[in-house]
Amino acid sequence: MSEREAFELTPKGENFSRWFDEVLFKAEILDERYPVKGMYVWLPFGYELMENVMNVMERLMRQTGHKRVYFPGVVPEGVLSREFRFIKGFEDSIYWITRLGKQEIREKLALRPTSEAIMYEVLNRWITSYKDLPLRIYQIVPVYRYETKATRPMLRVREIVFFKEGHTFHATYEDAVKQVELEVWIYKKFYEELLVPYVVVKTTPWDTFPGAKYNYDLITIMPDGKALELGSAINFGDLFARTYGLEYMDENGQKRNVNTTSFGISERSLAALIAIHGDDRGLKLPPKLAPIQIVVVPIPSKGYEEKVLEYAKEVYNALAGDYRVELDDTDERPGYKFFKWEMKGVPVRIEVGRKEYEERTLTLFRRDKMERSLVPFDDLGSRIESLFGEIEEEMRRQTREYFEKRTVHAETVEEIRENVGEKIVSFPWCGLEECGHEVEEEIGYGILGYEENALEGRGEKCVICGREAKHRAWIGRSY
RNA sequence: GGGGCCGUGGUCUAGCUUGGUAGGAUGCCGGCCUUGGGAGCCGGAGGUCCCGGGUUCAAAUCCCGGCGGCCCCA
Image (cartoon, rainbow, N blue to C red; front, side, top):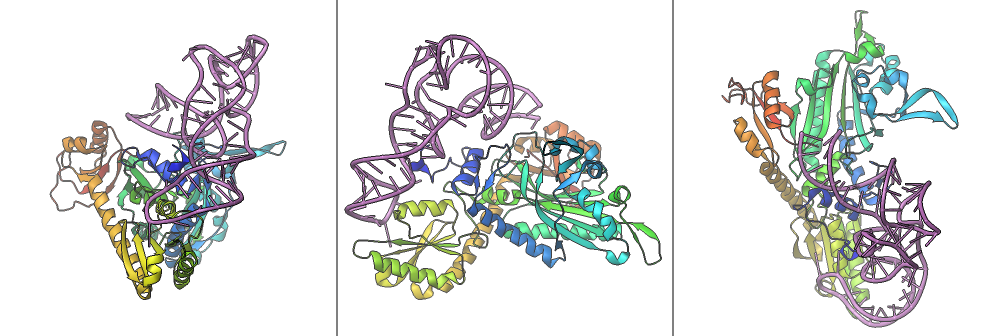
């Protein structure tokens, strides 16, 4: 493909993987040419977009009483190896620092794979009394995991660049339970704002971190029919209390174990947003998140070059205080600019030519529906406001439609089999481990999780044993 | 985890079978002419042919190893 097609993509429906890689590069989100597998360069446009996404998250974190912190990015082997996950094969995915300059190191240092061990090592000194609890902290940092499977830009990486990890500490198990509910609430709000559809599931006991009490995952479905994990919230109970000495003294002077939770999301959230809303022309961004919300494109014609440009500047100035606007007065032809800004997902384009100048009107173009409309200059402010609302509403509608098309509820193993692969499939499950394993064996994929008690009182029967099924389980291909 | 494909200026590629001057398009820079959905013309710059080793008088081309990328299946 030549650069003539700099703003052309492999059709999304034809080859989603290729489309996704191309759109990341051509919309200037990532430069994928860095010579370390699974690590990519974030370009200014992509970084700004990701910042806008993370700002949504940070606002929610602040609203719910979480404080941002920073803990170091390396951890000594001795500290890390106390973590139970380390023993469970976690070790294979760690990047180790084994030399310092020319010298072999005495104790290996790991590049942060996640921060429980790093934080708990210090927190056992922060927390001594019930008055120190609850404690809610988070950080947004890169984490390193040596993925052995094939890496994919933004979806399966060895350096997760924007890992928002929350860690909380509570006096009682009940408080930790409530906290996890809050964490799920935060993630729901977050993905609603991103216009990304999701299901909240509890992971099956055989798929939960060993030792953790339980674990909720948010999952979505990608255009290729594969489920993508978008975030998780884990209740560790007092599992870590013993290994890291996390204890506090209660009102009666009794020593008690601290209960902990963790919850995390990453740039996969942006990957889902891009994958679900993008089309064959490129990104399609919600107005609230777009780094550039409006682009003004002057269309000069002979004898009117300066007047048109002046008018375009007037439009720009009228909007610049309230919106993220860009005036594209580069020396390219209009068609080129149209393709370029459509690739980058700019929600609204304002075209200003001789006609608009003479009539004192503006041509508004909306990216989501690829439609134009003509408005008087004086109506601009109110029209943009309502247009943003309409765009978001339309994108929300498309989100629902998208999700309904790719999911289905089955009532028998046969129905699951017919739909799985193309869709992710929900089905009634009694909750017994034997029945779960049998479905997995019959279908050939793992259970993604289940919506607890979602089918209570509905009279649906477990697809395996036929007993009453309270839970709606989900199964399908996954990333 | 299993199988397959691939790596040549920024980008896309020809050349590889049959070893012998790296060619094109696009993009980039300068100029002219233009501008309502990827304009055109003239001039110019830009290359460790992924890396390392081997075979050979001679390697982009053949062989081995590594690194990187993609696809399909689990």
